[in-house]
Image 1 (cartoon, rainbow, N blue to C red):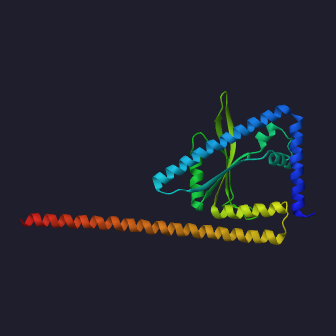
Image 2: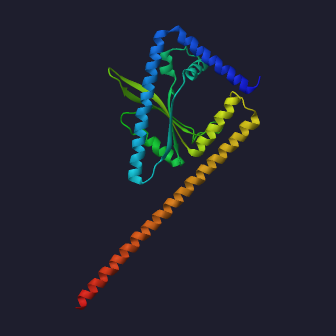
Image 3: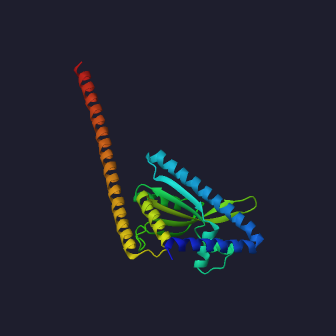
Amino acid sequence: MLPRVCAEKHQRMEKRQYMEYRGREASDIDSWKEVQLVYSSALKEIGTKLEILNDEFQHVHKYNPIEHIKTRVKTPESIVKKLRKNGYEISIENMVKYVNDIAGVRLICSFTSDIYRLAEMIGNQNDLKVLSIKDYIRNPKESGYKSYHMIVSVPIFLSDSVVDTKVEIQIRTIAMDFWASLEHKIYYKFEGNAPEYISRELRECAEMVSSLDDKMLSLNEAILNCLREQEELRISTKRNERSHTNRVAISGAAGK
């Protein structure tokens, strides 16, 4: 069977499984709507925090570490698929307990140094609790995938309760995101069983992307050093000019 046909068949099956689940428990449908509300609210909370951090960084350092932000709430079909894959019964309780990426945020940065700077800034937020970290930049996946993953818990204040809600935050460079997006599309077409030569070429592309990130970071640091030296030279020249002007003034006054 062709890969695309297989993928479509599995997608229909997952959707059917979810619809069967919906038909079993009417009360759980209301619960699922509440879950969607809470996770959507968590994304708004995290999004606002990130925008404030980005604005502050621009104000202090005249530089924005975040190129753009993507958010999404996982579809019910995807959640069902993940629970079944890991051997869990389909229930709202298991969704909340075992699926850590129902709410997801992706931060796209220019340079790898921005990734660790942002991760530290996020970790320093007093009302966020970092539950886990996976550094696929220093420890890439076998496929070549690179990204920095954080699972955080954010309190959502409802009218009658506070719900600690998990959000997955992925931080990566523009180049890493480009590679990961294409890799995901390719593996989806082959249902994760791509031919070896395609996997090999993807790994080679990942190495090129990593090299590009390193070169761009090095170039950015060189530019910053050059600008810093120019600023120091400007300040030094201005200081010397003032000193010379003062000496001339003192000399003129002494001669009178």
